[in-house]
Image (cartoon, rainbow, N blue to C red; front, side):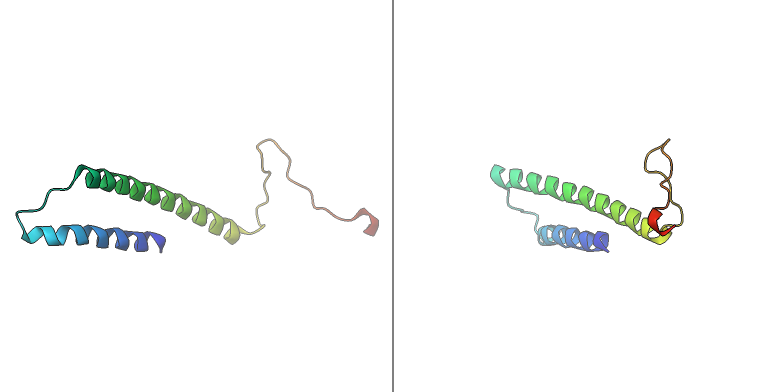
Length: 92
């Protein structure tokens, strides 16, 4: 869902910049300041894309954990023993 929304926003931004320049062969030149700003924006969009992928991975991991539930209780660290059920010794 997030990736589709992100894709549409980026696509709309690209179309906004490309469509007006398609009809004109005499496109205005950008100032160096604007070129630097565009480069910075591109870098930030790339960083947002990477963060979006990380969040999607985290979401799929959490959904898998929730789907599995407590069926497979394994130790948190390799070599550690699985936790025993905690019962109140006074009730025994």
